[in-house]
Length: 81
Image 1: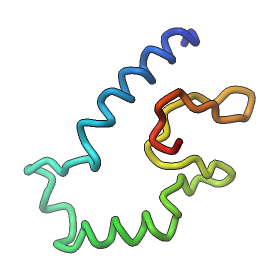
Image 2 (image 1 turned 30 degrees about the vertical axis):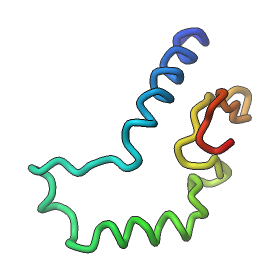
Image 3 (image 1 turned 90 degrees about the vertical axis):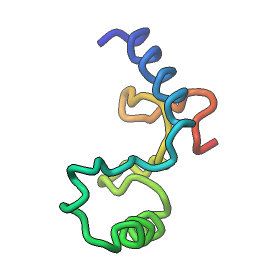
Image 4 (image 1 turned 120 degrees about the vertical axis):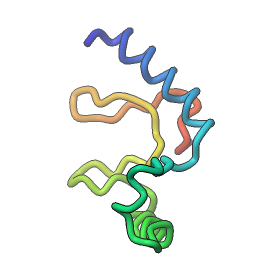
């Protein structure tokens, strides 16, 4: 994927990011989650310091950018600024 295309996708994602703080659970999938899902999610986010837990990543959640040569490059107006 060309860098220009990635930048356009990141720009679109940044604009959509303001519309929803958390991914909503679709009504048809609600039975798949425990009743206390919001509390579980909050505890996980707190434990992770609101960052990616993938080994070696550590990028703040809701950051918009790309990985290039092993380094995460944030786009302007990223949530973690």
